[in-house]
Length: 380
Ligand SMILES: [Zn+2]
Image: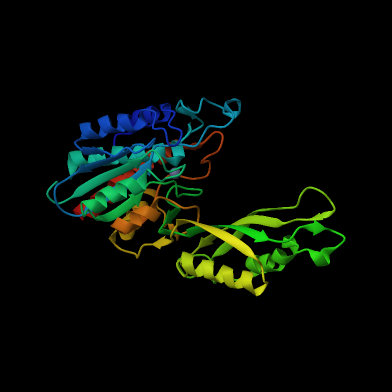
């Protein structure tokens, strides 16, 4: 099984870099050294302020890729942290540090697992393993994983088994894995009216009044009922603005934005069309800008899912629930070049929070499970 002391030391080192997204702050450079010492061939793909690294080993055979990010969100008020967020700290059977769960701990666990696997059962003429690590998952993601996907695409490299190490667990390591994610689509609408004195509404068009019934339909309509893989599509309004700040003027316009989290029963175009039909039904005069940030993805159950289930059962004695909820992930880009994608990592209970932490044993159990996964994919 993977070396716990080495995993601890690596985690400690990774936490010490203040790699607030997208600044790698030396963390990617450090991984480059660690991975080349293990025997990986390194490709650095830096763009603008983002650093990316593709580490590959093996000559032939199916490609297993582990994808992750070393960037973290800011710590927030340092005084509220029990320990310094950039020093790995241990207390009451837990490990504290910014990024320990999301997802430097996961990366250290995988590196521990792959280092062990390469020493023991790895056959470079029958297996290929890659790590795809970025410093921009938490911010725009524009110069991160998409750059690596482009690079692999240009070389006709297809990933057979893609494991994303994002924190997927809820209460216990292995309780949940993600087999897909919903898409995300945001609409920025401006509703046009005609400004005037509130006492003479017949000479005005009140954009709040024209938008209100349309809005009511947008938020109450059932877009679908979901399916076996996905929950129903939902629309959430996140902002509405109108008015001149006075009591006697009907405003000229209203702006609002709303976001769809949608399943694989839709695509962005048909949702945009359905919104237009509702707005037209209520005669709303408007302009709308759509920002499309993720398409839904779902991977058909295959060998990777089977192997992950078996490994979790063997190491953690659990049968994971297979879910597609939660925010977007870099799986939305990797799906273009991957046959099968699954997310399986540490607990997301404290991610992005003050005192981000994990159970210490989870770090080592995850490494053991990753090690089993590699063995079962290539050697069973
Ligand atoms: Zn993450």
